[in-house]
Amino acid sequence: MLYGLGVALILIGVFVILAAFILIFIASFRGKTEARGGGAIIIGPFPIVFGTDKESIRAVLWLSIVLTILVFMLIVALHLLY
Image (cartoon, rainbow, N blue to C red; front, side, top):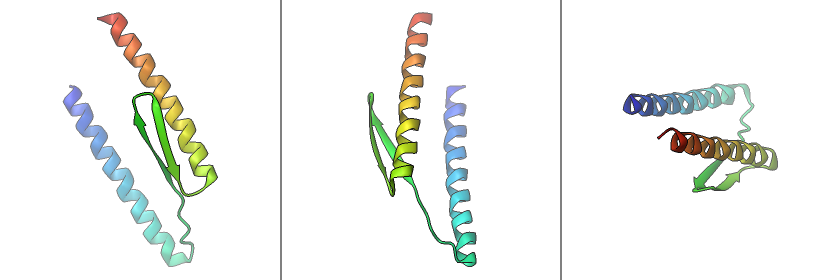
């Protein structure tokens, strides 16, 4: 079951990336070619955040903090169950 969930999440990620490339390609014909973005690498409880501007960095930072809290809650819940 977890194997199927992992494969499904990977496929969803690939489709999101493809959709982003298609949207940027379509926007290039209209003359609007501004692209912003950011990302996070979470090593243990510490997020390493990078991005192209302050707004995207702030959004990715908040998302990585929420994700870290959710992972900790999941770990504690699984530990209490087993």
